[in-house]
Length: 187
Image (cartoon, rainbow, N blue to C red):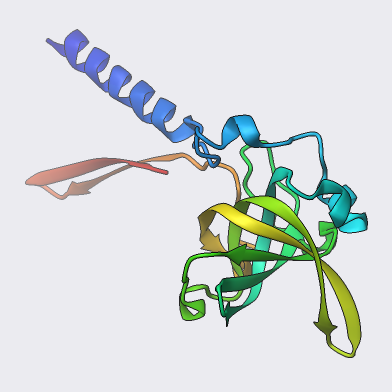
């Protein structure tokens, strides 16, 4: 009986570990064949018109959003992506800003500044707008898919783009009559 219990616990732990490490797909299956992974954001920012019509996967941090007549414009600070297409929370590695246009109504109040997202979008050229006291040329992407990540980018020191796993074991005595123990798994 004791051997069977250990076997069950072992397999439960293995399954939990596997589910914790499972890859989460950001790009919907129907868009995957359309994505051009050979084009970098740096190339797009230098010549957006040259990449018009191409569909890219880009990471970013929301700076602000505003309602347009035909949709919602979200201003992003581009962030590089890790192997799981999750933005790397390091503003120093950004290649610039861009606009993502959601063509259906998306209330700007629901898009909080500093939210981290991965965008699947079609390059539609560039738009010049003011950035402080200068004109800035923003590449424009038409949103095909937005993926919001759970952590907020204002927590750079505590957020980790990698899975975390921990096991805790505890125990104690209750004096002459009782005792106790515990086991916990966290992700």
